Image (cartoon, rainbow, N blue to C red; front, side, top):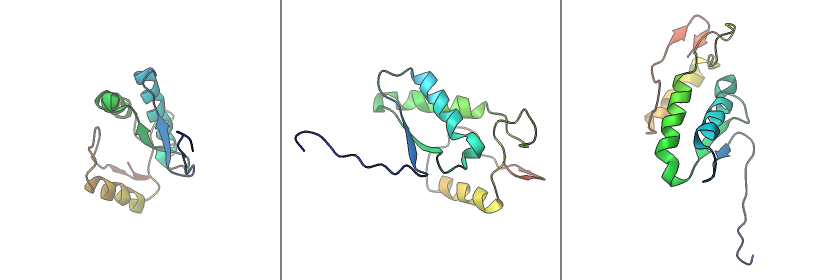
Amino acid sequence: MNGSSALASNSVGRSASIILNDADLEAAVSASVASAMLNSGQTSSTWTRLLVPHSSCESALEIAGVCAGSMVLGDPLDRHTQLGLVISARHRASIGDALARGPRLITGGSERISERGHL
């Protein structure tokens, strides 16, 4: 291909937010986190990965943690709620299973169960 590379992308359920070197890191990460959290991250087009230059990784994690940690968790019928319930106990268990495989948790982590579901 004369110095070029082929790129294949699966656009259903495995979307990545790609942040380049010259981006405003705080604005880009903040927008990425907000978008990823729509519908508690349970949409087929939610961003599941945040790709940043290696030199910006720790800063991006810190920004993402602050953004996610500042979200108001709760009942989706409460107008102040920014991040609602996951759809079922089974789905909440799958989150726990994913965390058990070793990713670094940067905010939250304690399960709360309300009368309407799992947070």
